[in-house]
Amino acid sequence: MAYDRYTLLAVQQDGPIVTATISNPPINLITMTLFGELAQLATELQADPAALVFVLKSADPDFFLAHFDVAALIAMADAPQPPSEEANAYHAMCHAFRTMDKVTIAQIEGRVGGGGAELAMNFDMRFGVLGKTIINQMEVPIGILPGGTGTQNLPRLVGRARAMEIILGGIDIDAETAERWGWLNRALPADAIDAHVATLARRIASFPPEAVRLAKQAIDGAEAPVAEGCAREAALFQTLLFSDPARHAMRRFLELGGQTREGELQVAEISGAVAQH
Image (tube, rainbow, N blue to C red):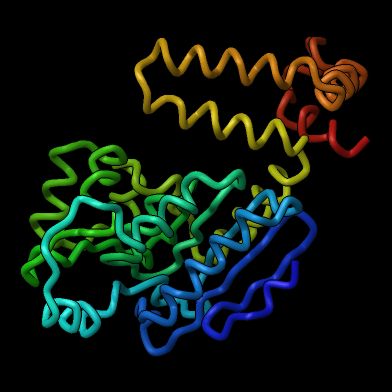
């Protein structure tokens, strides 16, 4: 797929890995134009059978995504509509990144706030930079509330009480705290994040694609009651177990030393090498 119809996103594809770099100076504000491009990219990614891992990053080391354009929100407020519980277009975009059969990774090297933070919450993984990454939900202080999935996803990530502190307090959360609370997978040194995310993306992309996709489905089943999630896991496990790629990979694992004492002491290396043969 070409991914060449964007002005605020620089999109590159390297085999099964797609990387998009945001550039909307001066602060990577989520304008209607940028929102449209992100939504379009979500649609294209969903339709691309070759894509397996997606990384979203920023060209600005100080801002990942500032927040949604407040001027655009004021314009919406000046033309009021009756309240509705229907999912809005921003919800639909976030849901697309959350549920697509690709692994989504947010590489957050600077500030992220409001709708930008809400978008990142819908990614499968989030990585930040020590001393640089700052998260802020600034909606309540300006008279609204997080309306792009934040009130639902944040308590699931950090717990109800901490979500209350972040949303009602409108405070900055630094990378160290965000990692400790579970908002970030890891907070890394500035000179290490690029290599860490790239290495992880390449490692995941080297594995059998159907195993990656169905494992994501199984993990998402954890939001259902345990018995229901386990039933879904069992069905997905059997789908993979009886597939030719799985049989080949498992045999190769044994050939490389899996299930030996020496091999199991370096099982991550051996399992990672399976796809190279």
